[in-house]
Length: 284
Ligand SMILES: NC(=O)c1ccc[n+]([C@@H]2O[C@H](COP(=O)([O-])OP(=O)(O)OC[C@H]3O[C@@H](n4cnc5c(N)ncnc54)[C@H](OP(=O)(O)O)[C@@H]3O)[C@@H](O)[C@H]2O)c1
Image 1 (spheres, rainbow, N blue to C red):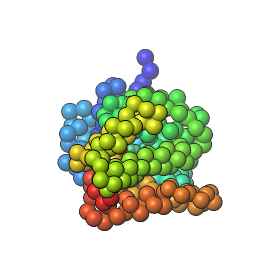
Image 2 (image 1 turned 90 degrees about the vertical axis):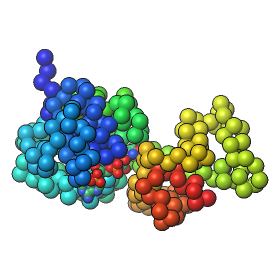
Image 3 (image 1 turned 30 degrees about the vertical axis):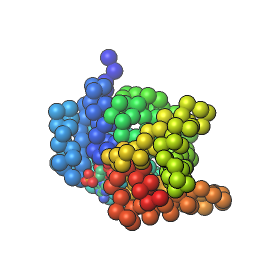
Image 4 (image 1 turned 60 degrees about the vertical axis):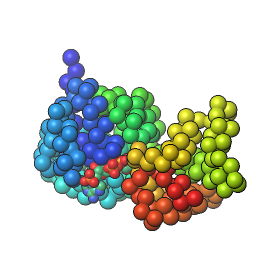
């Protein structure tokens, strides 16, 4: 029988909570920590809820971070300093972009732990269902040891290269997600402002080559006004900025993303930052 790694999961937000449940369901010993303790409490039945980062990571084989951005991840991992085991692996799954990943990799070096950059595709429901796609990158020699964790949270893991490659692919994938969301919002707004029932747009594309489950899901949510956050607009704005920064550093001339970023920012300024990113439609 193989010994299951002990996991410390830091950040039990929208994504982290579902991931934690699946790690526990796979039989892996689990500690969880969250800045706002009440958000970790519902996991008490399946995990040890730690009162501090240091308590959570002490003796853990895998430290999984699923926090907001590079600043929050770095600040949290600073609190783990001196408590991380020599063989511990840091599995960094928050979306932090290219520079953010480089900064966290340097911090991992300083902390003396192996660093794996493994952002995910999928939102609240795939996280709850253990059906994320993991874009993993990092040293070959730790990959097998992470398999029980990655198998628990995802339906598929792609190993795409050295640490940093996963985050690069994640930015490209999010650029596509945002293009679809904003594209649907614009086509609905056009249909509406050209004097028609906007639902006619969703009906017109339904079942054709340009339909997708996501088109109907997000388009329907926009028209129904159901904005319970699967991915909050404020997080989408953060990621749109990471994509633009990456595009600039690669010398790319991106056409859609600058406008999408403006529309997301406008909706956040209007007070919709905590709503699902489909709420960009409210400002069209
Ligand atoms: N939701 C999605 O569809 C999705 C999909 C793929 C990737 N992601 C990425 O996954 C990460 C988590 O997303 P989420 O949707 O789960 O976000 P979320 O629900 O907003 O959760 C964010 C987490 O970060 C913590 N946090 C924020 N600032 C912090 C700080 N300064 N110090 C310590 N902890 C801090 C929050 O703690 P509190 O509870 O105390 O606020 C919470 O645990 C983000 O990087 C996001 O871009 C999200």
